[in-house]
Image (cartoon, rainbow, N blue to C red):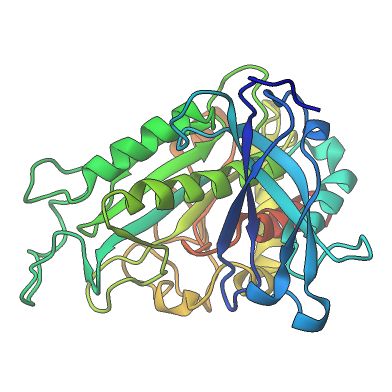
Length: 354
């Protein structure tokens, strides 16, 4: 029993719902019986009404939340300790729910331990105000053509920076592995990068970084709420001659990072990825064909090609990797609305377990 006068901690349980074709985030708050969380076992399992999240029927509605990752919650600005908790969804019989995509990734990683995969995501997104991108002419019409907006400056070039800066601060306070932000090619479009930063001992395995990406998406939505902005992860937020939004994924293994023959391992990985192209596309986001058109720095969805520095390739070999002969490759196919657990699962399966 909690001692009188103690400031009990709060935990915001976050999970993926049963939305189709794209799952969304849900969350609810729990007041804990302790003032500090030091390990996962300090966080109890919890239940929720799955019939309200497209995950069960009303006649048997309870689903179970099992905590699997936690970090500080910077959005709860009150005295005491507060946490964000990623929870997997389980059925009442203690089996993973069909919408629990994290469980598949965990199983694949158990079989791929020797490969030691590392991952990083470059998450693009777009701010909207009602049905128009943030800052676009509110009486119709369009901004000037793309060209001056990427990494741009000034109130006529960038829209939503105050939200982006607030999101950066929140991610740092949550101790996430964020390593960059920038304005993107289409006005009102931004990107953040999360994953390997070169910090010794920092966990960058696909499970940890995928958990953190979902936390980062959650924080982005929460910060945007304060500005009455809508966050769109649509793969093609605006039709026409405007860039789509992706989630480029950087991936490496012990073999690709090997200084002696890393490029050989990358070449073998690319061949496996080519053979599995259709399977990956199915897990790389809804309406992906609207983004992967062969234009706007993409390879057509029905094609597969790789190349050094080529932003129109399916798999891009970065310059440092090419020069050093080892390192990571970039999968440019995943869309902005892709589930990182599913993207990571396909890469682990194809590159590490083929």
